[in-house]
Length: 244
Image (tube, rainbow, N blue to C red; front, side, top):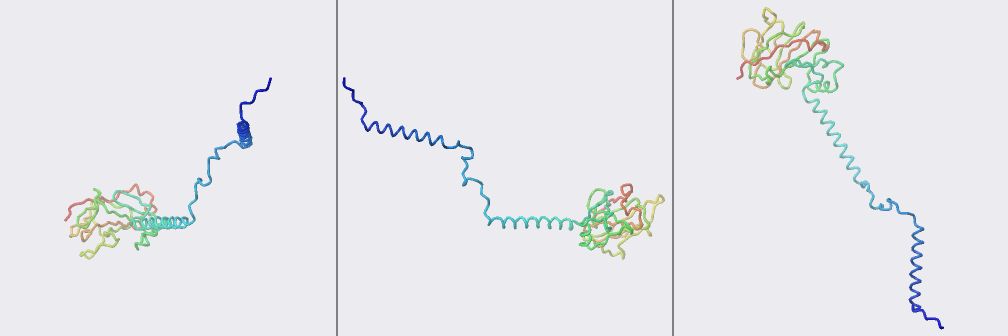
């Protein structure tokens, strides 16, 4: 019996052999490769890039300018605010016990130097300032006021009126102050002081104009210079009477 011929042609056998060889080679190459890692998904060109060097100097200069503006501006506002730090509030009156002493903060010292005002030293006395009346309204020279009550203990005190620049109000009465040596008191020791542009009987502090003003009560040789016991004393009330 003769052997039957293979139905596949020689070319067909050859192509099948090459295909099997390619598959075997691919399996071998795949087996030799390391396993894939999540890091393989990163590409070096996709990593965050640092800003170019040409942007560093402008950003640095901008930061320096902003720091200078904020620092100098805040310091100027603190010095130009017209009020010192370390204040003690007693009703409508405000005192600064540390002003003019070695314990004064740098801003208060700079404000004093800028305005040219000389505060009382700790061995001289203490000054109280009031720019509003008992109703909370701003004091103005166009209105008449009455100060009623007593002053804290002191060997001597003076009462003056100043403008917003800290200068004494110029009046036509020939004086700009009232002191304790000429004050008229009631039997119980209280007093009434009229603050007005026109002369008044009794105790009268002359003022002039119609601009805002501040009353300054300076106590000389007083035990309150250290600031101790300030909260326990009473200050004169400031009552508005009439305005023009």
